[in-house]
Length: 458
Image 1 (cartoon, rainbow, N blue to C red):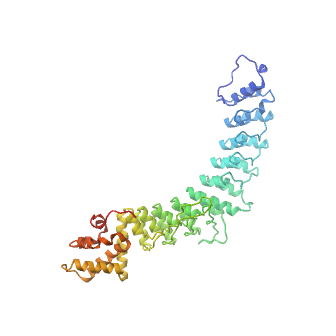
Image 2: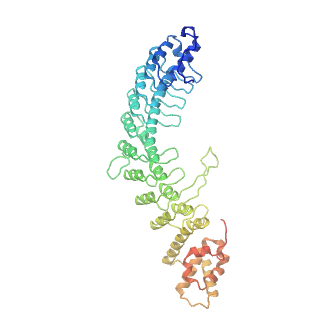
Image 3: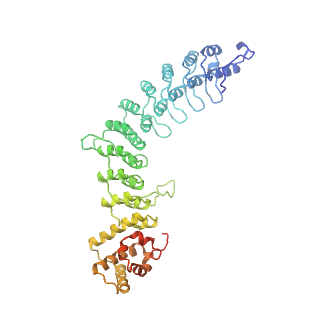
């Protein structure tokens, strides 16, 4: 559209044809300043009000887009059809709602504009007002019995949009107008996990005030419908954990959210916290009795049309060890994580730490395993017995106590069992230990010794 204000170019209006008058009207309505007197003059041609440009916009669309209230009034008085759409299926009410022009919205509503009319994205004016946070516009539309349940082409309703954007006042107003909806609990729960996902704590609290499911009770014996999941089976708590929103997670947990409810990949909130190094979230979930040794599966879809998945079987400790999150590993071990659990491929957290060169974590897990084996007095397997014999044969000239030999043998045995590629190096290890016994309990030095562990990839 042209943006210059109309100026006569040697022709009188009565000498212009309809196409020229329509063009001048669009130019006038798209100018930087409103000129309502010129609009009145151009509307003397009765057909001008119904003309349209290359995008299907009518003069009413243009005047609304500019926020020209007086021009909108003149166009409606001249017979502009209030619900006419452009090529994007937008009516004037869509434009006014999206831009927050409350005065124009009210005029259009008085002119019987349809409140449930949808654009090409199946969005109603209420969707657009909620998306942009225009409370007055939303209230005006709600006063005309607009459908609160209507969904856009992404399956989002007005409450979803307001909640995901953190517009508390609009969300509260929508909840007040939603009491007669049949699937109200589902509607609110859906908004709850969207607000949790985006980190809008105040909206979450407001939604929880209105959510009620008599089958779920918290410590205060009040209802809390907090475990409804989305299409990926992610609950509000799952999303809060995924995005490290601790305040929201605490609020949900205190209202009875299931701390161990998995998503479609079998990943629980604790797995997300361990995977992304959210130490405070991890501690919170463990305080609420998250299962520290629960195994998940990681999806690798084989067929996009079928739910085929490779199950990897990671625990939270696997994730932390694989990703190199030292603090997470230490906290999990302190909370009773089992470092002997193997994933689908038979790998333990210790093996994953070694594979990825995470020496701090390797040392932490190695020492924990050695201490556990000594404390339990577990009988050494055959490979360890062989290691003991090798030690005795190679270190006959060194006087050490039986306990020292057993400690060395068990520690070597751990490496032999969990790292088969090292078995051929047992004798080299024993020779290396000759005179270096105090350094044996430092796995970092052991890993750094090129004569001990060759470079290899799993």
